[in-house]
Image (cartoon, rainbow, N blue to C red; front, top):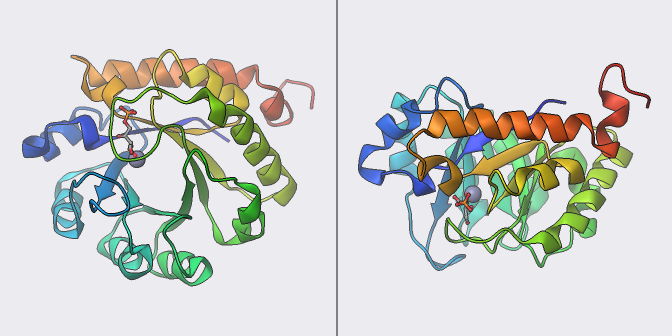
Amino acid sequence: MAVQISPSILSADFARLADEAARIAEVADWLHVDVMDNHFVPNLTLGLPVVESLLKHATLPLDCHLMIEDPDRWAPEYAAAGARNVTIHAEAVHAPVRTLRAIRSAGARAGLAVNPGTPVEPYHDLLPEVDMLLLMTVEPGFGGQHFLDLVLPKLRRARELIGRHGGAVWLQVDGGVSHETIERCADAGADVFVAGSAVYDSDDPAGVVQALRAQAEHATAHAAWAAGNVPGRPG
Ligand code: DX5
Ligand code: ZN
């Protein structure tokens, strides 16, 4: 279990996406791509053609977060195009088992996202179909929003569910993750951290990624949930 940082290009300059991706390529683990269709969320960003272009230029694996009305239709196409992870929303998907399996069959990791007001317990039985759970820590749609502390208890419960499941499911947080909030997320159980404005509103995006990783690693090393997994610590 290692901390992973996934900077979101939502806060980058959309006219210079390849350059913006390159700024963090040496220090980040993923490039988080927010696909919004103006139906599932009240914002419109980019779709498959832009992702296909980005795949030609970005060296980091793409972490595609689909905030769209019809993930059953579109998610497998992002996987087939070459996205390394494709995350769909529980609130939008109609046939989660089929769609998560289609993502995996097309060669990507399969992610399942829940909004702040959506409980995670109903998805416990889906964990064998999932490589990553995404707990939104803002209402999806826009960068630069305030982190919602009310999601922290759910994050702890999600980490427990994953522990009981026993599989290697990653737990991602997305929304308002910054130097002020990342330690709380790591302490509660997150291991994959999306950060948009914290990274791209900075003059030194790579430096921010490194600092966020150091904070998250420090908090994880002291987190009760991770005690059994950290060498040298009592389980
Ligand atoms: C919001 C998106 C996020 C967004 C996060 O709906 O899913 O990925 O880029 O931006 P910040 O980190 O600024 O909250
Ligand atoms: Zn996102």
